[in-house]
Amino acid sequence: MSASPLAASAPPSNFLTHVIETDLQAGKVVAIVTRFPPEPNGYLHFGHAKSICLNFGLAARYGGLCHLRLDDTNPTKEDQEYVDAIEEAVRWLGFDWGSHHYFASDYFERLYGFAVSLIKEGQAYVDSQSAEEIRARRGTLTQPGEDSPFRNRSIEENLDLFARMRAGEFADGSHVLRAKIDMASPNMNMRDPVLYRIRHAHHHRTGDAWCIYPLYDYAHPLSDAIEGISHSICTLEFEDHRPLYDWLVEKVAQAGHFNVRRLPHQYEFARLNLTYVVLSKRKLVELVESGAVAGWDDPRMPTLVAARRRGYTPAGFRRFVEQGGVSKSDGWIDYSVLEQCMRDHLNEVAPRRVAVLDPLKLVVENLEADVVIDCEAPNHPQHPELGKRVLAFTRALWIEREDFMAEPTKGFFRLMPGGRVRLKYGFVAEYVSHATDATGQVSEVRVRIFEDSKSGTPGADSYKVKGVIHWVSAEKAYWTEVRLYDRLFASPLPGGHRPGDPPELERDFKDDLNPQSLTALRVPMESSLSRARAEDRFQFERHGYFVADRVDSQDGAPVFNRTVTLKDSWAVNTEGRHG
Ligand code: ATP
Ligand code: MG
Image (cartoon, rainbow, N blue to C red; front, side, top):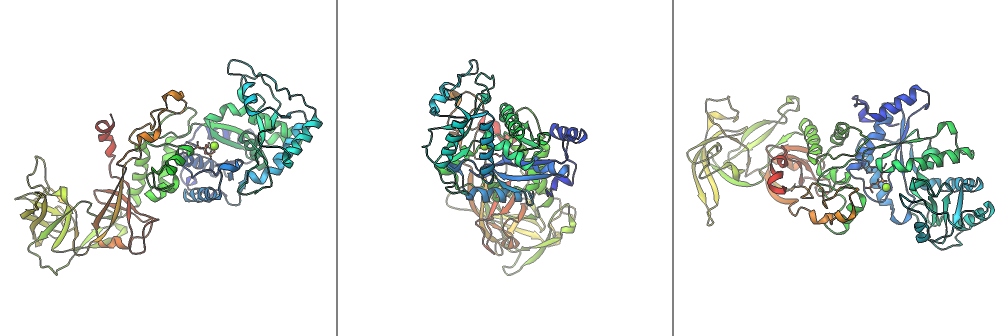
């Protein structure tokens, strides 16, 4: 069963919910069965998250089922590694296919049988033209195609040739099986499409059992029909394939293989297009293979494994998909919308912690070196039930370098010569002196604290101080690596073109990689963070949301990835940087 987290809230209606409700009311379908049908030739990306949330979400909403079907009909590009990664990603997003896990390759025998039926009905034939000859006779959008010289082979000859194709008697490319539809159809997909080709290739599941493989356009609708899918939801580029989809399921049903009144129907929705990333497995493979990123799970990648390492949350994705809606025409969503969805969710669930990303030493002169004062800090300002933790306040502290200015600019309210600042959750501190190193950089600031100002909370004492800064005990800090990420691409449309633009507009999308997309730092943070477990999420005050990296963290020694900043820094920066 699709036990979906979407079922809890009532997600907005869209044209698909309308179609389903109409079909249910009219009695056209008895149960809603959808499917998510990835090809195991790469890791899933953010676009797939939309398809997963939609398919599993619709099934859950109408008490139906959603199947996970690995569409493994192309042996040369597919691999078990990808199958495993796909299953893990769907589960991570919070969806469950129950026992409804299928492989198109499990249907090879039945698909073959359907093809034999089509041949017997005179609806398919073996064509012995080369791929080039087939292409040359296909015609154009304005000109009809030409019939193949093999189009009128007898049924007996076709059956014999097809059986021998399967038996391995012929070389790759020497024959194909084609549907016999209409070489003059205005829809190119209906001009006798190829259904099977010979490919002497090892398949990751069926091994060497087959040397003919069905094409996507053939295997996909018939797999839907085999599984009793009611609503087959796919992206808009398959709209022109729908007549072939219908033709195939109807013809195979008429040959007695399916109930003609319970055939699947295809519906197309707009794919997710997101700025600053590429959502195409082909391009993602290129990024991995060229070494532009460290792997499929590099936290800068728009894949679901990478999102998980980055600290993005399943709930954030579900929110994003829901908010984006389901449309019938293509559009673009700005990357910042996805980030905001993550922020909104993390703000609710992430406990607060303190880390100093650019440390400057602060010495409290009126505190002895061996004194430790416990300061309490709430784990979440809006959720007192999450309790408090203790921060150790000591003579030597780390503060952010930017929180002290030796020559303050106008409007600077934090620590400066002659000034006071509140050390959050601690004390009010007053400037005493500072030192600089040989290069003129400030190397240390010395202050005195007011002991009656403990807690550092504005209003809790009589000190009038404008600036509040965070700090970490230098004696007690946990030092570790944090990785700060920027966008993987510096351009909103990597390669400068949109899908569907003419090829001459296309540049190499890799030219738009952002050379500054990763900064790794070693920084001090409050000691409780040394106990963080892989995938624990926090807000580091003023710095954003962070997650303990699930790959590189050791027990007692986590390293952190910044998931997202606290504010959309790109909204203000975009023009200057990329305009
Ligand atoms: P890619 O173009 O990245 O290679 P694909 O469509 O070839 O993706 P599949 O494994 O065939 O990848 O996709 C599985 C399902 O995910 C399909 O139903 C497909 O329509 C859907 N899907 C793929 N990309 C997107 C996207 N950007 N937005 C929404 N759904 C998508
Ligand atoms: Mg595909």
